[in-house]
Structure formats: C-alpha cells, structure tokens
Image 1 (cartoon, rainbow, N blue to C red):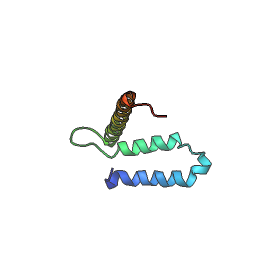
Image 2: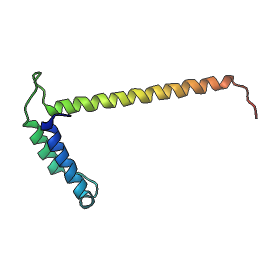
Image 3: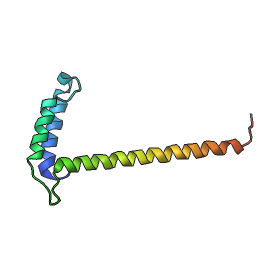
Image 4: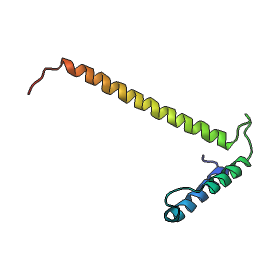
Amino acid sequence: MFDDYIQSPLMREEKFFKDKKDELEGCYPFERAEGLYKEVKKMGTFDDGSNYMDKFRTLITHIGNALAFVRLLRSAALHFASKGLEFCPNKE
C-alpha cells in the first residue's frame, strides 16, 4: 500500500471521487473501477506470482477476519458478563 507505483493511481482516483462526489451521487463509476483494475494489473507480479490485486484481496481478507474476531470476543465477553449477573443480588 505504501509503494509509489500503487499509491499514485489510488490517490488520483481518490481526488477524482472527492471532486465529483456530488455529480456522481456518492457512487463510484464502474468504468473508472475497471480502468483502475487494468492499470494495477499491468504493474507486474511479485516473486510468488501474485499481483497487486491479489495482495489487496489478501489484505482486505485479513482485516475482515480481524474485525470478525474482535466482534466474536466482544460477543463472548458480553455473554459471559450477562451470565454472571444472575448471581448478583437484586437490590431495588
């Protein structure tokens, strides 16, 4: 993500979207997304045979998995705490 080869097109697309956000009604045009995908795909491959889009997919998957794990832990903690409340005396 910090590589200049990938950061430059992403910043250009971010600027385009910010400038045209009202005209586009908050929806990113599909044609621009396809163009960005083709441009990123032309950037080459890494030693393991993957390209930048594969790296993005992996990164997004890892972020999603981490968020799901945090939500799971939160849910388990709330469930555990609520089970412990039944042993507290009811003082009104």
